[in-house]
Length: 321
Image (cartoon, rainbow, N blue to C red; front, side, top):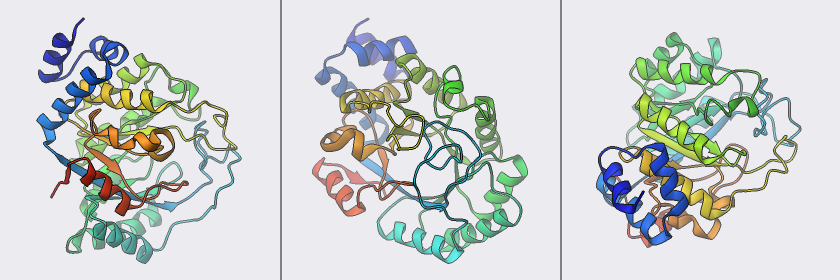
């Protein structure tokens, strides 16, 4: 393989897995960054999109995901709480809008949200969606059926978030209380009811480049238009507590892999950005990212929107309108 072949494939709609893996494994940094920057600019110009999230229900999840501090199977020391009051969710969404976030995500632990809890959060979603200058409302409520997702959409939800996490072949090493196909089903239903979907993965679990590429190809086939890339921030008390963190260079090349495989899709850098990318985080745009999460994460601190806005400016980029 060679650089020209990779470029032609990427510009034609996306590389094959073999081409993309070869590129991130063999190309010199200036060659790879030159190509991923070209692809990002071709699809998105110099614009960047921001999102913020709120942990609206924390902990006591019955699933046994090895990476998750909120799993009841793990012993991470976190603050547990039930559903936040709607006034707090609405206030957080308003603050995200003032921080110039394009999207605001309401996230809950647990298998699903249904019944009175779903009615409760739909009221908050409606009020946020109707507010002037409000960010687009997103939700991450676990496994949902068609009726639940249609109710959320009717309330004003724009986008549903549900990560596939990793390739189907690697998933049994990540979680045993439910299968990967259950995650895929929720994404398929969300798309079928007309919601936009944000679905991606978590990297640094011990997966290899082939598993990373396999996940991207599934997302390409599904037609997901926003792919969040998260990097493992190993939590004490979880089975992955001793997992070596990804090096910044490898994390950046994961971003490049996804840009090569998904040239027209929003590549959104999310969890683990401060810890894994560190002082190199501004390079994520050069490796192909065009969006990222600002503010705090679910159970860990993030970076202030003010600092992130300054980083965007220093990179010669602008916020999308």
